[in-house]
Length: 352
Image 1 (tube, rainbow, N blue to C red):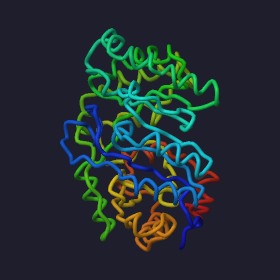
Image 2: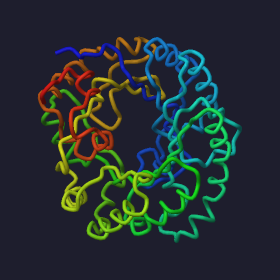
Image 3: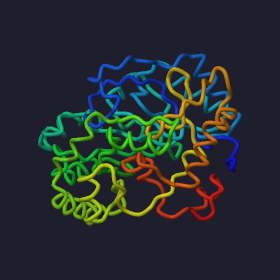
């Protein structure tokens, strides 16, 4: 069946795969030594042109976008061409002192704080080493006061070295005028899960990702459950836990990375999103099955969104709803547990 939508609603843009931080739970950590790629000006112009024609929203992901010298230029061009700010910028915040971004060109900013300090440090170490980052939020806060955005979120990934102090981290960051803190369970794909996915989907590729995924084994899930319950009691809706699981499901999440836990979720990503990599290659998702759809220099995003390979994948997902790599995918974890209006509208699936 053809997709209900004929163009993507969201375009995720990898300005660079390079990063200046060493967050232990990230595929793009500095110490991995991958070849550093920066999106060229001509590629950025093509992205802006295609996105403006589509009326899509743009999110910046992958490496550290603030390393790219054309970040502000990209955001201004996008705002001028489409009339929309960048929907989301993910950053580690270490480069806030470089230049002065026009924050009114960003709808929301998420700070991944894992790499800002040694996670085994006491909270006093956190305060001393990240105080400067907190002070640098002033420019973003002024823009939010004047324009109503960007929203500001702090993110931290649960790890053996930090989970006992999660409440302290939340308390510290909520002392700043941020919109919320996101506590995210460690996601990734094991070699076993990737192999199972390839067996189910012949002709499609899935690879293991997140080099530190095995670190989940060092988490005491019973103690973690008590800590998360305390966080929910103390901070309420100001802290989001992703995914928010009951105690039994949480044990399963950390003990077996290949099984699904919690409720069935409904991800509409194959029907509403594309990713543009720094090289100009376009894929469905770097967190999912690798679908090399083409190159933005040779085809428009609208054309690539209707590529036969992606249509084949959608047909499979209409039958299966989820596949093994979904088990520990952060996008799947944040998808609704009931097929909502967006899911129905974008997929054409009425009763999975």
